[in-house]
Amino acid sequence: MIGSDYVLEAHNIYHTTEVRTAVDTGGCFNGGGQSALVLKGVHLTVHSGEVMAILGSKGSGKRALLDVIARRSDGSSRGQVLLNGAPLTKSLFQQRCGYVTHACDFIPGLTVSQTLHYTPTILGGYLKSSKVRQVLADLALSQVSHKKVENLNISEKRRLAIGIQLVRDPVMLLLDEPTQGLDPLSAYLLISILSNSAKKTGCGILLSLEKPRSDVFPFLDRALFLCLGGAVYSGGTRAMLEYFHGIGFPCPQLENPLMYYLCLSTVDRR
Image (tube, rainbow, N blue to C red; front, side, top):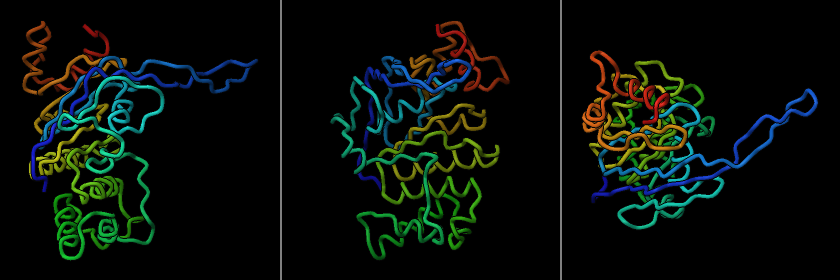
């Protein structure tokens, strides 16, 4: 349980990195690279207990932004990333925050419960066991706690990867496309679990989504729409509807506001 309020801020983030391009060499294409500006003056704010979604199509800069915040990006960056007003260094991020990617490898032969129990934390003994049981319950993994990790389905593996971070009690948790590859029910379950966990523990959650479904909208407190590395909107989801309505783009009835404004911002950045 997080004992105090935390605020994660990113101010005027620019990031340049090498992107892969196809180079024609006499009928064969070899992968080349050239420098490109992939983030252009992005701002965001996430508070304890909030869930913020980074929304954008492929190539919009979602993963680059998460990597810049986590201090694990290649290339050069400028701007400020702050945690409670202090610069978020790589060391501070590793101590106080967590990052869930798709490249989480589990140790074969271990059960779900053992995987969480062997995760390094400052807790030990009864407190560690109690924390593991709580995380299993919060992530709807209690029924598969004695299941070998190699026998889990994709939804269970995704939730276990999240559990490995949550057992460490991060104050901020970043997730790269957590619903990718999941069926609609599993995606809904995952986002609802993350929302409940944020409210219960006070952890701030920042996740990227490429194709957000309408049923996850109630679980999102904030949204950041990216297009070609630039922010089209960054703020509360309730204020989002008023903002776009105020500039002449009301969301039609029965439309998914997340997808509607994602598509709109992709084709018309005004």
